[in-house]
Length: 122
Image (cartoon, rainbow, N blue to C red; front, top):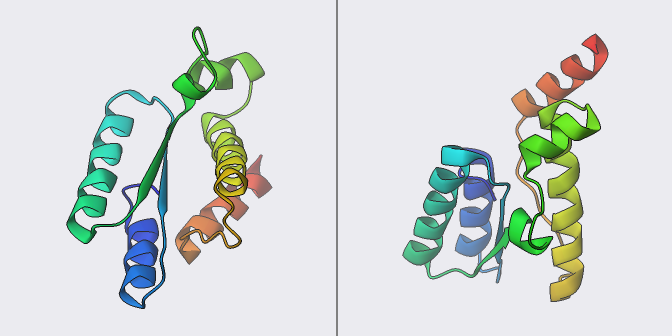
């Protein structure tokens, strides 16, 4: 989950159609952005009485773990690429750990087109 319209709309739609869908919020530790988006996901979960799983990247990897911004610098990769790889890894790890057999992500065509264009330009 992010606090974005795509993921929250997907979660809301699944809940409204009767699915027992848990949300996963991955806190990447990106200063005010992570604090704000986490609060929005927690608020949505509370309003809908839905289960929200929160994974904090810094806590998950122990004391002294570097944040996602520092990791991007260390790997000399664009921050967006580092965020995406980390989120995909944590999402898959969490889904397996909870025994989920379906994983749904919300994306819109604008996101896909921007990613494609960015990859072509780089």
